[in-house]
Length: 400
Image (tube, rainbow, N blue to C red; front, top):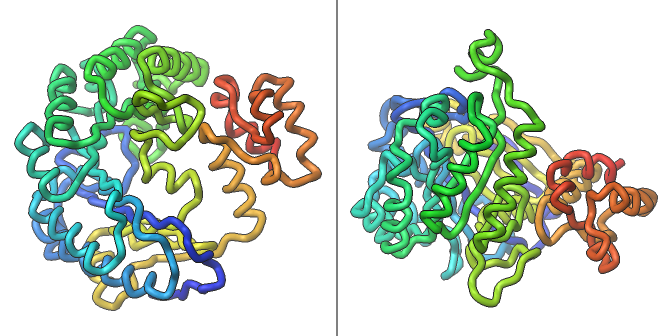
């Protein structure tokens, strides 16, 4: 690599996660600004041979990680793009190779993102046989005209049967939903939640639509062909989601994520059976290695990001230098991230993590209805429902 990671920056015994970016899609959605492509770029950078370049970076990761005393990998996440386009035999090759090069926990969570158009019962069985144990499916909406606006092509009526097929194959199944799409009414959003709940997935994520300027949707909004999302509308939709999901046996453990409660589990914690281990690795500020073009990595206080174009990334692996740049986090950066990330979770933030001169602001936030007073009495800053809507503001108040 073009830089070195200092052993002094990594504490022994830290959690380690692995992210594998698959940049290929059949269609590029109008709202998406992820690093995705609808065609390949030759050997090692196309769908048929992509796994070979992934193996090369896994080898690089193994050599780089070897001096550090991490726990075994707790999660592997295939994100995209549309990772469900990968042949299941290639998934198995990747997972088998990881296990030979980097210690992986026996109970590691292994997630594959999937477009509903690309999976069925037989595909789920092959994915499970390859070693995947969790599916994150991009449902986005249960309403056809909303899906059309998002350039999504799947049939929302298939979602319940797909969830059930995934669960029959032994997979935990998560559904991703997006709220705030131009033209989506409150009734549309409620319909989407109802469709998701009818399927009874193990986990549901809900994300507010962010319109990025370089996307097709961003251009349509700029031209006035689509309206800009309304923050008040998005807040109302978040409250609808929280009410409906909570009433149906799901508990929030991070602002955008709900896990289905199992018997004996209680709300207000992150250690739930169906909580995403990989999501929590980010929110708990664990270490992670990102494999693939444009993927970001984080070891101790060092961050780096790979070359973005698949061809440039694949070619750079021959020299062992996939990184395009890096940065070292300052003490101020680390404090900001610790507060920003932990406050988003149901475990909240220990008051001792807040700089002493700023702890007096905690009671102000309690008075504003943003922090739970009972949890503050127990030594933790935990967001109320109103606080979840204003989490960025709470972070600003609690940091210099």
